Length: 78
Image 1 (cartoon, rainbow, N blue to C red):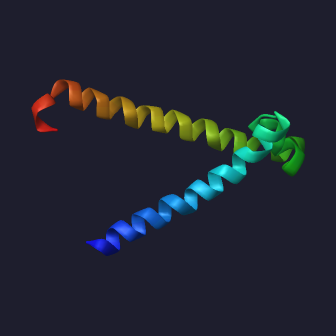
Image 2 (cartoon, rainbow, N blue to C red; image 1 turned 90 degrees about the vertical axis):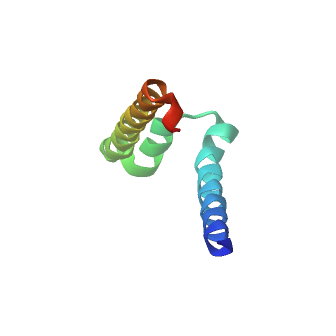
């Protein structure tokens, strides 16, 4: 049991570090994610990370919507 808790905690700490470094430029220089991508990958290279982030947001919104519908339609099973 403690191995799974340690693994989950380690993964959360690792992704928290990545997220903090990803947001550092925006917090310090007040530039958005697409602008940071253009600086790193160029004008056409920045399309992929921006598109990937948009698709991931759409999919995650769908996952949240389905889970909310399941909770509302079957409140006693959760």
